[in-house]
Length: 94
Image 1 (cartoon, rainbow, N blue to C red):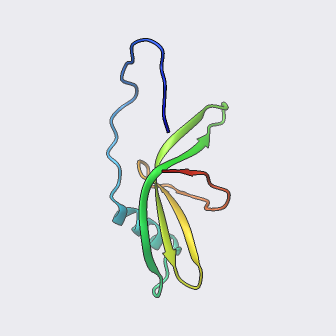
Image 2 (tube, rainbow, N blue to C red):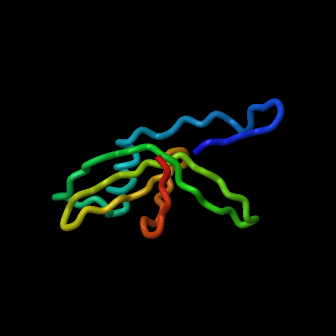
Image 3 (cartoon, rainbow, N blue to C red):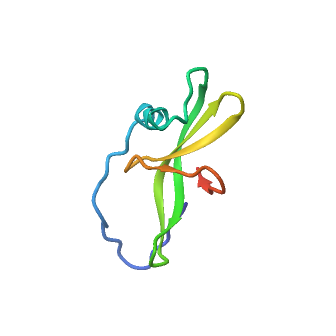
């Protein structure tokens, strides 16, 4: 994701510490998305695009957790808030 701005840039918002990948994996375990015989194959940080109710698009830092079990599936956990996004129809930017 690249942002271009005309003129002088100013800091926006507050600095946010992202959760570590193990904490994102714990969120999936707590929800029942990670089963005892599953294997976590990969954890990649990137950005997930979401549209707010006012039509504004926001890119949130997001962990993409790949879990291999009966099938291989990607799960998406917001790295700032710890929210788990539905994994169907997600555009994930690395």
